[in-house]
Amino acid sequence: MIRNTKQIAINTLFLYFRSIVVMLIGVYTSRVVLQALGVDDYGIYNVIGGFVAMFSVLSSSLVHASQRFISYEMGKESPQMRRLFCGTVSIHLLFTLGIFVLFETIGIWFLNTQLNISADRIVAANWVFQCSVLTFCINLICIPYNATIIAHEKMSVFAYISIYEAIAKLGIVLLLTVMGFDKLIDYAVLMLLIAVSLRLIYGIYCSRHFEECKFHFVYDKPLFKEILSLSGWNFIGSTAVILSTHGINILTNIFFGVTLNAARGLAGQVNQAVNSFVTNFMTAMNPQITKSCSAGDFDYMNKLMARGAKYAALLYWFIVLTVFVETEIILDIWLIEVPPFLPLFLRLTIIYSIFQALSHTLYIGMLASGDIKRYQIVMGSIYIGCFVLCYVLFRLGLGPEFGYISTILAVFIVLFVRLQLLKGMIPAFSPQYFIKESVIKSFCVIILSTGIVFLLKYIIAIENKYFELLVILLLSVTVVVVIAWALAFHCHERTMILNQVKKRYKHKFER
Image (cartoon, rainbow, N blue to C red; front, side):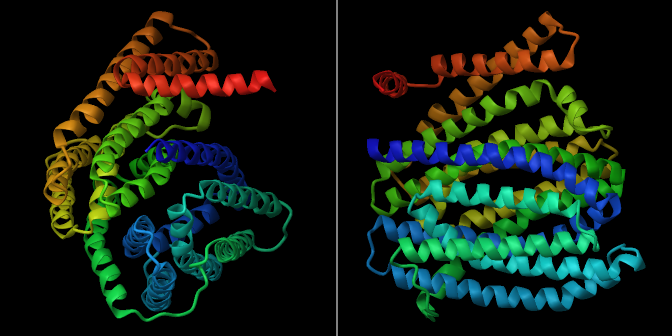
């Protein structure tokens, strides 16, 4: 157990390093791309990229199913790993072929007849579409390789490849400024080349380091049926979640116009950058949850899910409290013109993400058990109900913020539904322990730290916004650490942290 916990910590550090580098490069490249392409071409690229990304609802279910099966078999130390890997890749190849046909028929029709693109840019738009489709398909084929790296818990490799991807994107953005052809087409082709290089890197690394990654086409009907069955139920849930996010975006556009769509998009972009840190922590923890389930170690699995949810929520709040308190200043520094409702939207998005962080380990536990039919039906119903509720609230004349409020209500309900359903799937699971260990402790830290930092902000009342942001950042970090140390951690957790700190400092002094 100690070794597994240490492995999670090491993996998380690698992924945090990756997130910091990728986020910093991403913030810079987004500005340069906008400047190089111009507003119209940047909009075309994002519209087409967003349309292609909508098909990710078809692939996201396969992502979770692939990771679950590979991690589960590793937890049992199964000799069938190579056949499982080849079968998983074969499924993805067939699935990619099907999606490619959809893109080249319905997708082309939709692009050329339904999207609002000027006639003089339709040729460039078709170039972007084809490059985006090929990039999407290549990324889909890479999923089993990514899942294998995660299952083997080689997060350093995952981090280094992601950093290469970010640096490569920075390179092509800088290259755009000196290229003389159609910059929109140039950008799309160069992004495709990055996807091809990533596919080669993942393939070469996995084939050299993991015995099971020697691919040959396998038609394993029982395996296909099992993975597609699990993916099928995931598809129901994924579709419902897409409806509650993109669907509410469409409702916001219908009732309030494109300005608030821009505000929702920017709020999501900021939160996605911050939330990547929690995603990395959960990526490092997911294989341990799945492996403990497959090994029958439900006591460790129970503790891992509860403490993992607590750590995820506290890590998220450690990073995001400054953003929550100083939303207006951060947006004013980042944007020339801040759209209306954006500060409120960003704060509501952060609240939504807290519940997501607390709930994620429960979902991984359910996925590890393999019994997700009932869960996906119930969850799908909740998120569809969220969409309907949002429509009714908008029709009644309530403001655009109620789109977020309805989504927060849905994810709050989903958290407690997952608790009850997981108890039925895994009798050893204790909802009471999870609530006490993760939900109550996390919200004690969140509520107290937020109140204290807001109070200090108005007491100090600094006039210079940059200095105020720096002071609030230092206060937020200090307050969250102190309160979490006092209220959220057990004695043995504090002892473990202190021992690790002493060990590191002792090692440095000895050197």
